[in-house]
Amino acid sequence: MRFAPTDEQAALADAVREPLAAADWDALAAMDVFAALVPADAGGLGLAETDLVGVLEAAGYAAAPLPVSATAFVAAPLLAAAGDPRAADVAAGRSRVALAGLDDPVGLAPFGGHADWILHLDGGSARLGAAAGAPESTVDTTLDAVRSTGAEVLTGDPALVGRARLRAGLALAAELVGLGRRMLDLTVGYVKQRHQFGVPVGSFQAVKHHLADAALGLEFAAPEVLAAAWAVEHDADAVRAVDAAVVLAAEAAHATGRVAIQCHGAIGYTVEYELHRYVKRAWALEALCDTGARLDRLAASLDLPEATHE
Image 1 (cartoon, rainbow, N blue to C red):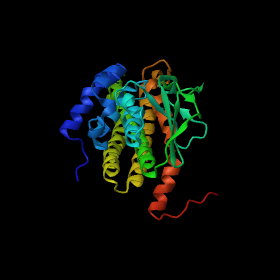
Image 2 (image 1 turned 30 degrees about the vertical axis):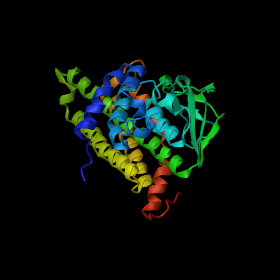
Image 3 (image 1 turned 90 degrees about the vertical axis):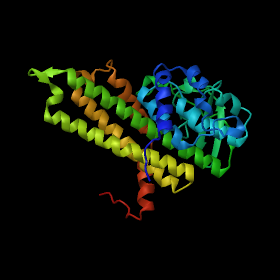
Image 4 (image 1 turned 180 degrees about the horizontal axis):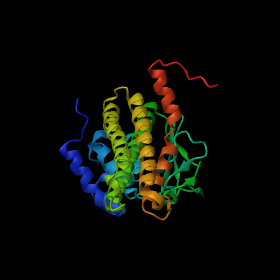
């Protein structure tokens, strides 16, 4: 099996890069991005999870301050499947939906300040409430996060809720890969033009090795994300596949951020520098991944012995 995007999937990802970079919600809506996973008989495009992986990576690459992934990849298909009357507005991009952290009792919702609704996926239910809550300070100020717990049950169907949770994990993984690629591209560009001792610092072997390690981590994570999307699409051991994708993507993005800051030198520690926009977004998304719980589930699925702590 070849876990690589098709030409059509790559073209779709390329098409959304410009509006994502400009944070142009209306342009994305005009392209039917938010209706992509909604079935055709419900007025959507009827695409599959694998078709949207490139779009999610592009959203991470742009670090757009909008709930694009939550609205298009999680909320719109869930609302359509649940037969909720708000589904049409969400699929058309007229309403924005932020996603609260999975099983987060205090309802921390990234982009809640830019949304009309907040979707909660906790336990075995999905709840939807108006985007009203206390603003929350985060390491990435562009997240405009809020805390919100007021929401009514949308559905308790375990199949629908389970699929939404898997899609939420996939979105995190794909965005982290996109963020990693953006940080790597910025760093490669910087070390090519930054000179020391009369030569580009990118010519130093130590710098090359750091960047090669970062690139390798991202190249390992990216096909795992696409494989997880395929698993969700075909209901094939999807929980384990998504957990593995999230863990690999989070680790790869974290490592790339460290390398990016180090290879930039002193300017890499300057918060006003562009790199911090992507590093801090990666830190914020990584914090939402709950990699510890995912690693525990992966270990249990492989019958590994429990870890002991001295």
